[in-house]
Image 1 (cartoon, rainbow, N blue to C red):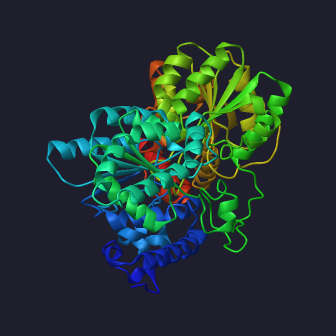
Image 2: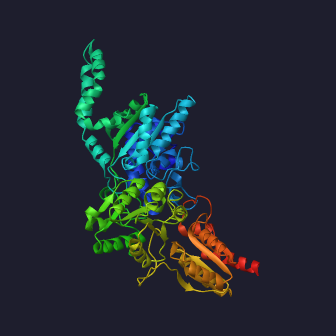
Image 3: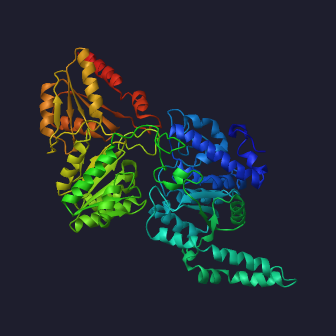
Length: 623
């Protein structure tokens, strides 16, 4: 049954007839395939290497898409894609028009849920199970959630409801001790203790084997002992009762790299009524020594050399995350009231050096963005200067807390929004193109965006000097520009003026605006460029001057137009009675697919050539 090429299989059907030995061999084949493909395209490798046997067992024992398999976060679904007939698409993984790196309903009927943010799988699965029960369906609903996602509040809201409802569903806790960074918190400690309870499981198995072997009375004795099971379990592994006390049957821990054991426990779970939690122990990066040694670095990676594990592309140029991390350490040395707060991503957001220098002033709260914000409000209320570093897309989850617990209280919490704007290959669930819109209408909020590597540290310093909340948003990837002196004082930076048009822009889009200005000049059109720097409050004085000396104001931002910087400029001009044309350029009112940043900007008309053409057309029509 084992074939030389994964493309020769008819998955998932072929899994049903394969022996355990064949399934084990398949796991090696899949790991080799993943390393070969992801080393060329980049992507999430460590999490997928750790989920190979678990995914094989799931598709062996359940019949997707009739049975519903829901994946939390989704960065662990490459094996799922292979086993549902999509291996041929891996050459274009995460490329524009190619296979997504996350589950996508539009991509396959086997993908139940477009998951990209953690902790949501249990709620979604509970809803599917409840709908099945209403419709008297017979299929199974299975949710796979990582131990990192169990640090998120949404998961506990779901567990509370699931245990109370008694819904028949299976939850797989894929426990590798990691989210992106190593896990922290009470649940993490709880799970570490549970991993040490395998002795109880062996004891229970041996009791059943011995007692049921007694002629005539053996089964009756075992039935009697089964009634004492919960008392026995609580006395031997008291740590395991957290799920049981919620009304959820707990099975485990199970070796997540032993397909035979996984199949047995999945079969047992299928026979049970009510909700079941299967605790599976896996190793992130399993089978690839570099990923095993550095699971955080290989969580999400660009192309790399398989033999050395080193990136294929030079990383000499610092990223905005690097620049932010250096600035935080420098500022933290100057002021011992500055503290850093992260949500399971200290390494990814550049806070590793700050943590090493100031461990007692660094707080990683897990995948719990809402808690991170209100926790920071408490820090600020007591005189500290918290800097909350969270990806733009994930800060969306704390919308209410930012309004109620920070802005309403006028507390000096600084939000460092990493990965703002389009982020490329991760796609819809990870683009940070909504932050200007969801922050801009919050009273008391200040918002800035650096155009280069020198503006970011200056803006961070300015934000920490304010008496109220402030957000600094910056993009993913290499930081542009050279080191130079920067003064941030609430004013915009006029780079050039233009009699025909002036382009007001924020962040790295300043570089695009300068390209547009140069192209327009070649066409005989005078177009200036203003680096707004401040999205809120707007520099009204400079904006008024701009409107008085040009014919057209163009706004350019790496954010959706709806509710963004451009609409704020247009509204302010209208309020002040300015009789001037305004053109807003930004992302449309839709979810933007995955692809390279440059390719997406070209498709949606945000590249220099497209913008130049639009401005020319507008000026000609006005003339």
